[in-house]
Image (tube, rainbow, N blue to C red; front, side, top):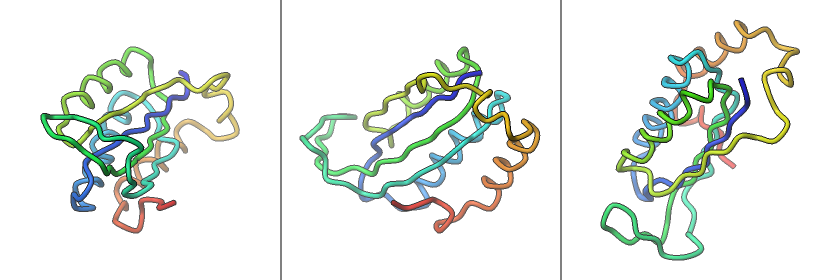
Length: 132
């Protein structure tokens, strides 16, 4: 299974709990589809390079989040569909990282990675989201 990365711009001005719930929802979907969450980042609220229209509104600021995960390619399309339907997500880009796969993470046992990801989700709070 290849390593994927999703970078998303979500609505600015929403509570941290809403961003956390979005990341938890996406991470839970990955875990339910026998995937592994490699990294979750919340880059905070940023001014957008240009005004963008999404969900019948114009936005000049957004909160940028990133999720790196290992998952089956067939489940990725369902994850992208769910992100398109989510009203919090303004834009997103999902990409397969070049020349990467589970083999690059082979120094870790898959069950260890899955347990660590589940533990990360269960203990995730406002401070648990890495802020850059």
